[in-house]
Image (cartoon, rainbow, N blue to C red):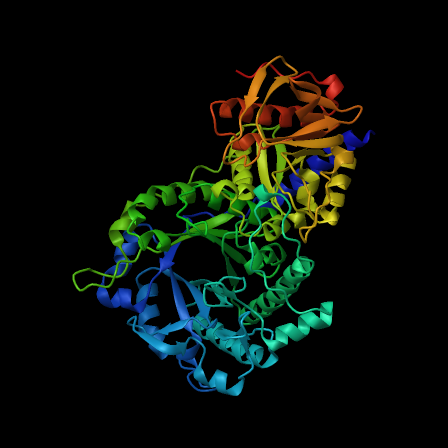
Length: 630
């Protein structure tokens, strides 16, 4: 049997297995709908539980503070929490319990701030003075070092006691226990301003033992519009070091939760953005076996300005399912908007993004946050119920697509975002924009079933990989050689590969390779053009490409190798073009999904059309271009 036919047979079997795996992911009944409810909310508004239930909220996210329940070593007392949690559960809400042990600034039950105190008991600092992280300026931070054996022993004791007590007092009422590794309670390395962690001596010694070098400080930005990035020889090793430690700690506490019959949950901030190099967020790919539930969140802020983008959470939820999470929640937080009194403008976006995300099979619910009023005597409570009432979360129907659907993988390599940390080419993060635009465009096609995949999914034994008809690589300019080898192996086994520009032109440390997998995509040479151009497509269209902010450069004129075919030829140079087809390959010299002038619709249609042709007509010589795009 030809290898292409064998690939399709294997893909069909793998797709059936994947469908069976996910068939039971969505439980009957309404989705989990939660927000943070504090004792102060109950104090200010005794009817808050009934008010929340009327707005469709069925869970409450609550914080259980280590310093409160273990004020003395080994002396656990949960009684202060009982009235608060009893009122929530008796009123009909279930709980998500955040195990608050990451060194967050301490507030008491009425919201009073206590400077100098944190959610870690004071006696822990006395018993383990070297058990806390330092920032890169060697200043002490309040965050415990969860690789420290003594810290682990003490904090795991808190976790086990908390889960045991609450599981017994509120049987069937606790959805999961969230692991709070640092003050934002997300599975990442914390950051205050630009003083990120961990650079304490224990971490320095561990890194030196592994690499023979000190921990690097990632305190720079790379802008792809400027060309070659700053090369950091230890960037990849630093990322792997941090991720390994995060995974070790997260799985350790997840086991402590499960040992008492609880379910483990982890929060993850937005991935594929400008700050990945600080946070080591690609650890998300490695924790699917350690967490029963993953929460992926977005605060509608790109690190520089407000960003009312409804595409982000659905894309991230899709990715989390691809890398193995069976139960996913999406979190939409408005605190950045609330600070400038613009939350009301964001509410329609939150409604739309949550409704879209909930249509995905593995998404079991959502959390909203940041809808708190300022504490003023005339207000009924800290939660703004009027804003909550304005939300219209209406999950779209979960409908299986008809037979014949093409399974399309969109590669989102975290390596790329590590190298291009802080990129603001043309005022936007073009890598992120290319990924989101690709997801939005391809996901809207009735014949496509889209999966945002990570590097984890490129392993030969990954069942999702075997189900894919094509992998599209949207502007992933920095990739390890190992990933390029995996993509090549996928292609050799019968899969289709598409790149929209600059696939792996730099390695995982930012060193130029000057190669876009030229041998696979049939690229003889490239010539950068700082201006736009006029092109003749092989179906007779004359199309203009103009330079724009999102394209950040003109285009790369590609000269194809023998046997490869130009689909869009430069009118002034018949040997060069911006679209090249080979056997199950398609390469662009620009990002057609980011064109933002009057030709936008045409280029997007061509993008979709040629991806379809590359899959359905593997050999370009036997596949004529579809009818002319209007």
